[in-house]
Image (cartoon, rainbow, N blue to C red; front, top):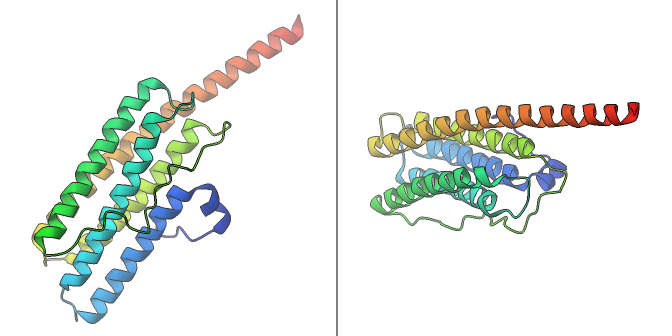
Length: 208
């Protein structure tokens, strides 16, 4: 998803996706600046900036999944709200690990990054389907995975503890992405089946 370019109209409709993409753009700038100023070595300041970018990504996802878990709507079935609560807890655990590592390195965790604003006031339209929402989540997960992959490559053999932490989190996010893809496929099958049943009912009614 490295080609996810800015689009004002899409960003207005999908603010969460826009936030995650912006966090990635910022991380890539840190990588470029770090590589240029550190003459091939991994600078401490660049590492801290990248860790805060990773923290911003996790916090954005925490907000997203927490919102799902409390939405007062039929869009998200009650049976799935527990799963989203669990997902939010997992992302919060990642955020806490990253924040703790930033402190270990002598930095200051930014728990309210500008790239991950609280979007709790952003509503979903009544016509938005859960499958569409999950598709947005899946894209965001893949952007995050790509970002973590770039951070790992930048770190190389430097900062092994930081690299191992990011590798561990990236592995978990890859699992999340696979789960989201499977869940989205299942939801889409159910939506198509429901639509087909509805159309069949209308056709039967019209024949009477």
